[in-house]
Image 1 (cartoon, rainbow, N blue to C red):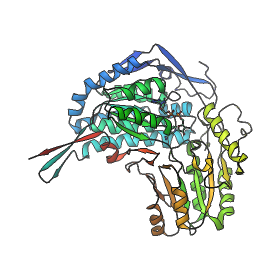
Image 2 (spheres, rainbow, N blue to C red; image 1 turned 30 degrees about the vertical axis):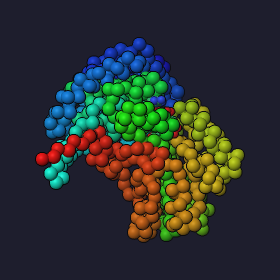
Image 3 (cartoon, rainbow, N blue to C red; image 1 turned 60 degrees about the horizontal axis):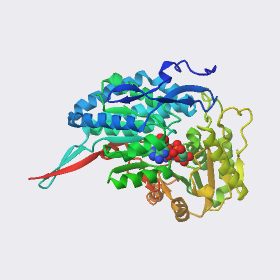
Image 4 (cartoon, rainbow, N blue to C red; image 1 turned 180 degrees about the vertical axis):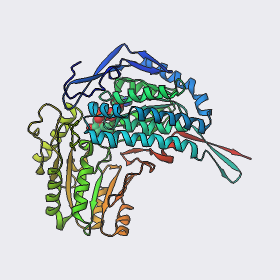
Length: 483
Ligand code: NAD
């Protein structure tokens, strides 16, 4: 392994892994795969690479754990989840370093968004296990919410810890053992989470980790008859495959897929507030956020002002070393991801896009990592692929609108519907517009992220919801008892 100067002290033995956690035991995999730092390109760790037989063993371990875990009193599960939260808190700095090293996220973003938010969500699920309504009365029926069985979870590389906790927190609180396959690019934080589950004393088989390629391990998990619910976050293409396979076995598939969310600025909004906030949200995590506001819809009469403000907001962001506390934007995750983003920028430019700032050239002085300049594109028609397709990089497309109805029509002109925003000087007007957007979440005038609010998508953005009580319900089945 090449250890470079800026590699954090934590990059020791705990990042050199060769195993899968199966039925509570770390079992060595036949193969390993390297983990690279997107900023330095150095190898920072190693992951085990499991086989389909390992998936069989992990699912068998989870099934063996199911009766005990699902029958454990919710308050007792909550106590164990509290212990897990404590273990995660103890590992906070190492988790932050691992996220910086594997995702390339700036350290301040890694700390606040990737790690602290994930720990908050885990603590929230511990609390929910205590307070969730497991039993309700409906006339002469008693409705029981029961653990839905063994969960298979497949996570992406953009927020590896947050996505893991959104699934594992809900499943474990609901009484479901979970078998997790992390993205190949970013397994380190999942290994650290697995260490925390062992240290917290979760019973064997309740949390299992089988790292490895999506086509092998992800498919084996999806197809496995011993998996009752498959929970996936990633691309819409793979999501469709998973939904198709799950349908063969009438298996529930919870899918968090792509997005092309719109930030809608109405004509009475304060542009000086709305535009920089929209740009910051659109570029968070180098734009590799499924709920990123990658479309910015502005009043036609204020189009040029909005473009100037957007360019100013981008100019104020610092792109560079993710280990620098002042950095706002790091690299994107991989060479493939960079190629895909710059190709989409070039193609948009060839179709007539105006590059307001940024562009496909590698930013000067940042030739080593997978850096992409934060880019604002304008003057594209509403049906342009750059307007319709997810770019999943630091690229925002600005479109003019002709009033509230036109803005709603433009915002809804998308195969996706995951998130969005509305900005207006009149809150009631903003809420009226927000209520017409066919999307899972809308933030009005910079409304804060609520980790208990259901998160998920309409249309091709997915099926089901994560987080909070609605997210927990995804991992339950109902039995209705009549007297
Ligand atoms: P992906 O969908 O290929 O991978 C996501 C996860 O699915 C990974 O763990 C992967 O190993 C696994 N996987 C891959 N093929 C599988 C299969 N056939 N069966 C089961 N599991 C499989 O996404 P990616 O390659 O990591 O990224 C590609 C694009 O996906 C991105 O450019 C972006 O548009 C989108 N994406 C979206 C999100 C999101 O949060 N919505 C997250 C990451 C990526």
